[in-house]
Image (cartoon, helix red, strand yellow):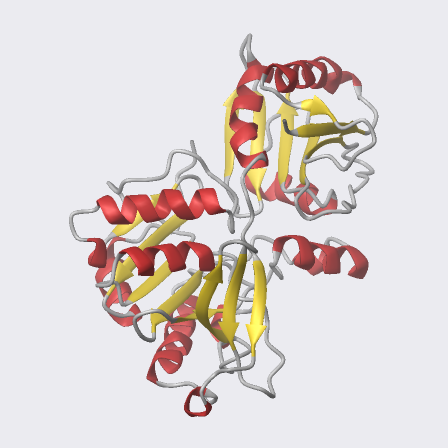
Length: 352
């Protein structure tokens, strides 16, 4: 069973909803943590003085529950700072009479409308996110071939495409995270989520039958300069340990690879015709999309996206959607992908 804990004081607008969520969690098989490390924390925060939940285990999923008296004019811009300040995986903003605004680290922001079963609907949306399994640990091996220490044509293309994405406005940073939290909390955000608030999206290119180069996590994608630090060679996946294996040069301090490495790994393994993969927070009309907006870096999101790619008429040249999040596109090369999809790109991801 999955354990949960509820923290904070219930402000008046939240009391009934919070009690309903607890009851719904119990109906869904969750049990109170009772002193043990919970897998889900519902943190009731005061928007005037939000108290962050500093978890002891990265596997704990934290949901910040708070309230606004009226619907915000710009839901993402007004709710995202609370998510960061509360050190939460997701923000649940209750607007009485309107519903609950879900805001994710990946910039997903959508409304679960008010109704007689609001708490049940919130838990039904929350449960798959809270119980998903992260695959974001890295194992660095100093075994990269000397001829690749300085990179190759693929790493240089990754750098060029990163700069092109920036010129197109496709590397959105929703807020300067470092301006919203203390240095201590910023360190924890980077550790928990493997992001740095600089730019979103990721890109990779197949090196050979089993390996691929991929952008690092938490790095400005317009400045992918140094192989082994900003661009890493994914050489394996240790499923038993849940770790992405990376081959790096002996004298470079590597960054962590993008949290979506497990997704790219699954796509490359299942589709040998795929030469490159691009993930951006944009949209293309008429594409198939995942049903649940699992968090980045989870096995569940990777499996959902990989299944959509495999089911496409041409897996080697396709675009699939990540609901309330963005797109993943495959192709012969990163240049070919961006040339093909650029005319159809919508900067605004639809939310539902």
